[in-house]
Length: 332
Ligand code: AQP
Image 1 (cartoon, rainbow, N blue to C red):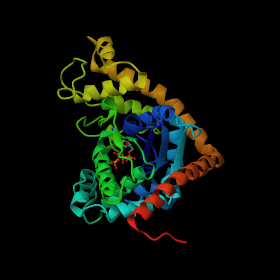
Image 2: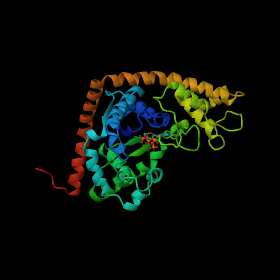
Image 3: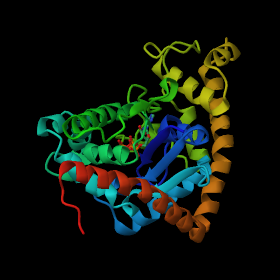
């Protein structure tokens, strides 16, 4: 079976609708057809300041949400990044292979450091795409299911894998991005030209899965649309309406043209009210399941222990091969 690898940060506590539709939903589907490795990337989370107790809680909460979303530890390998030390180890190797200018071209760093102020941004934030390269290459992943915002990092991963293979002989599988076009970028409900993001300037356009459903319903009903009245998918002319249609179509498994037909002659109000209802119906059991998983810490921790063991077996083999190829003297 082809292999997939992906990760999600435990930083915000709740996942948002962009994380779910852009990434996690695909993870659930791919565990049926692929040898799937999924992790909560706590080492990425510490590229910005974290409160230790919150980070611990949020890491468990992220795992609970992944299980609630449908990941099955019998069908995939689910683990926490810091439990597998090979990530940091291969990360260093990849740092030594990356050009400074090459790393400087990563647009996510530019965006995130601009938000934080250049002096406060850490070197870790700067090199985080390179740790991500190591995350992927350690598992010899064929595909990486992510949202559009990660495409550039997958390109970097391919470049570095090819560079290493060229210099030291075939070592790494060259991974391809697995980006589902329809849900590659879910937009902010208040600013439908910006990606829905936990670090948006205002929380009004951000739908957090663990928020009170009433709060999210209100946000959906207040989504920015346009001054036209026709419900039609047109990303350029009608980004707000198109975003709502994408969310609606994905959550219900209905095709967008069918929704356009269903809402012919109806106003935006009807679309928003119905979508709010669809979302609340979907999210209510998700929230309940998350709380159930969270309540059984013993099971959660044992899932993570098993996951880390399975992940380490693969990661250690790749790291050993990498060190050997580069001429690092094996420890006797
Ligand atoms: N709006 C989005 N649409 C589609 N996919 C998205 N992803 C994130 N936002 C969207 C995808 O979610 C996965 C996990 O991402 P992450 O843990 O790196 O979260 P993030 O990118 O840090 O989330 P945010 O909210 O976008 O945070 P900031 O504002 O800090 O950048 C990834 O596969 C990502 O593509």
